[in-house]
Length: 310
Image (tube, rainbow, N blue to C red; front, side, top):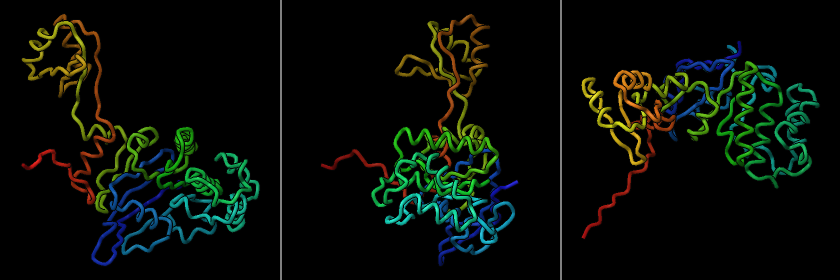
């Protein structure tokens, strides 16, 4: 079982703790979203896992071993941290060929990952002519080169067009279905909600949450029901004895906090109240995330005041 295991991981830069006694496990067979405000320690943690920085304390291992002890690391873990890392004077083919040779990877894999990432037709072009999205695809190709069991991606959709965003989303989900361990850092909440099964959330270098996606959202929100009815007065009368209240929205629907659609549906049926629409309303990942990290965002902008002094 190839997992990423972080135990009491700590990284200090002088008096500043970038990572503070952090512990979590990224398991195979699911996409784990790695979230947190700017400065939360996500990039530092990924660098520590990949042996690019030395921890002040604690451990970070891949499949039970530190990255530095992996004989041919690209065959165990593939990572994209910086899409600008490839030398601009090289071509995608030459860049990947060097990586393949250094890790004992068959040359046929170079062509395979170029085709998989949509770069087959530009394999002989200089990288310096590439757009950000094309460089991003090349970085993903490098991460996939060794057919690794562990894949770590930092902002993988950065610079990609809509087709590319759909492609990387489906790629990550496929890798997880194949039993690989997939860790993805992103600031795009709506995008993360479309592919992540599990979430690890950091704030100021500390672990704030380590939960499945659904549990995380439910833990930060109350039940709410949205409905439409032609008997609003009768609805309010039926709700009152249960301490519930329906509030009308601008679109004409009614919202009821603290209840589920199943409960309200049963109540309406018992009271003979016709319902034209009924459904549970859950918080979005963005709402749940902002609620959790509100006190752990070091660079939050203040809300501009609309008051004007005379």
